[in-house]
Length: 79
Picture 1 (cartoon, one colour):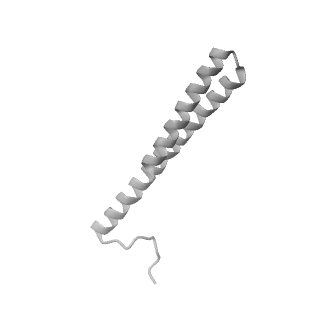
Picture 2 (tube, helix red, strand yellow):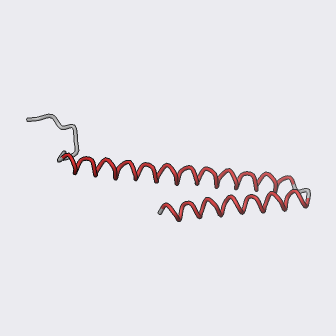
Picture 3 (tube, helix red, strand yellow):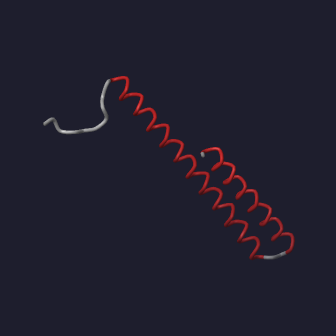
């Protein structure tokens, strides 16, 4: 999941850079803007992929800590 998300983000960034360069070369402002938007979309996807990876790492670490300390996971009130 994480690596695929990173590749998808990189593809959007690259596509955006190419589109922007073509727009600048042909003096097509709409292509320049579309290219910048694709680059921004790729940057956003990259950030989301990083957040997902960090969240998963944190959840895995919390689960390891619970197993190590013998907790059952939860802030339940004792009956």
